[in-house]
Image 1 (cartoon, rainbow, N blue to C red):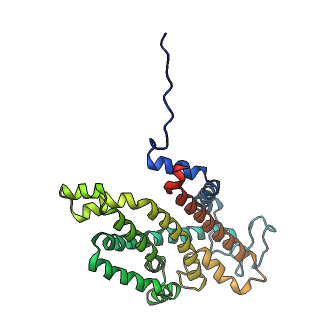
Image 2: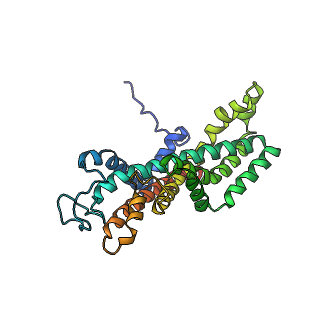
Image 3: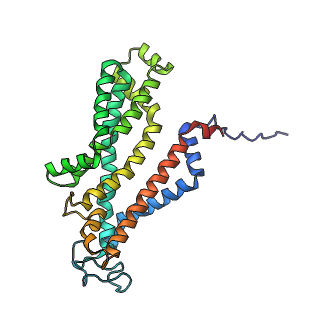
Length: 294
């Protein structure tokens, strides 16, 4: 009689690194909570404005209407009579878009400079490290304000202004990773068969340096969202595009009479940044080899 032997359960060593990272991330309850919160926020911003059907700049009722008192304006109105809920739904699109795009710009600049410095070393490393240190000691908010002021305030200008001041941490991390990986066995083997510097950096070293860079990019998203809110609060963003920071800034003088117009967009910023931070912490644990061994 033939006996069927069950296949052994894959061990940690047999699993792919990405599947093992997902297993560790999934076991982190705080990270999964952040993922759920962020997913709800993204879905609400994606479909909420179309379902609600109210433009954020239109006058929807009497000014200073408190929340939960009128069925037509659930979260009340601001000092001009604009619907606060419509502003929260639409404003999240601009805020999160700026955060993601600015993080992309910052990571692109940081990885490019850090990869060149870490791979080539020597005078290239010295020159690029001095440039990184120069940007690192600049007051980030003041420098971004100057950049936005020099050009016409728009989302594109704000994205590049935030990206230009937020890349230094990623550059230092990429430099350290490329310096560590450039002389390992697989890099030397690729170099021995004729691979050039560009192929080595992009196809051999960069994929192995991605885990810490992904964590760094996640943390930059949260910082960029706060940065955009600060610039919008100061009036240094596109006044024709609704955002959470613009809502807070335009209603700050009436915060005592119209607290809800500041509280609800502020709470949205808090929840979004909290969710991104929880996801970043979860990714940091997921890509930590010591936790995999446990």
